[in-house]
Image: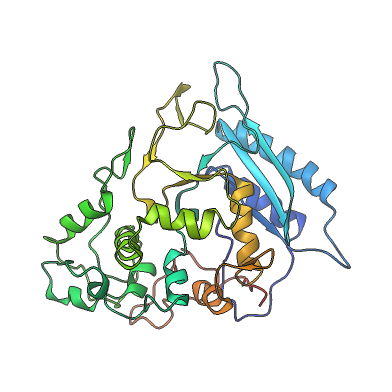
Length: 339
């Protein structure tokens, strides 16, 4: 679940009901690592005991109905985690359950906003061409010089697809972003840059190279230093090495535990994390870029991330995209961060 869905310019944000929370919990069981954001406080505050009781029942039912081995949940209200719990089993032989510190692969929820930190610092311009920062980037289509940083983040670059070689492996594979660059060097664009938006993780692989070129750090180190450490996300990490047994939830196939999945496209969703850690990310976004008084992002950057970036494209997609977030809810219910 994306913590920042919809356009931040719409004032129709409302605190979710218990029904909203339970519906979101059901979705989270299908994608490991659930994040539920819940406004409240003051008059009409949510009664958590009733919410938690109903959520537990819904989660256990969904686990049984879908044969899902395990799930993890966190309930967030303003600046606190009010409930965190693991369900099911992460080891069907030893009958070990997950706990709130058990890491799950979070996938696209972890398309981080590292670029927006550099935009805030005036080190990156969203509308500057990719080749300004990754000077050796090439493609067979000459229009590649028109691809901007913004297009990498909103899926409108025109890249032909996603580089699946070594994207998900049983052991860590270094250099995935450079491998993707090499593949793109002989590829052609499938449409003009900025013409339409089609989901494409390769844009985020190139963002890894942009961050490294600008900062002199690896993408993983930059995210650690500027996002994970400041937010206290101590149970979040990339698959640079094998994780200790019992620290993460493995996949199962026909009751056979699968090897750890190493997600080597770090910018495209390679983070393992917990709902409580992802809740800290949500708290920062819901508070306009600050986390317990420390500014991580400017309020303007948070607003820009949550804005539908695809509304003005010549061919407007069915599924609008934000700045890194996918499937914006701006044509449904809106989300508005506080300033």
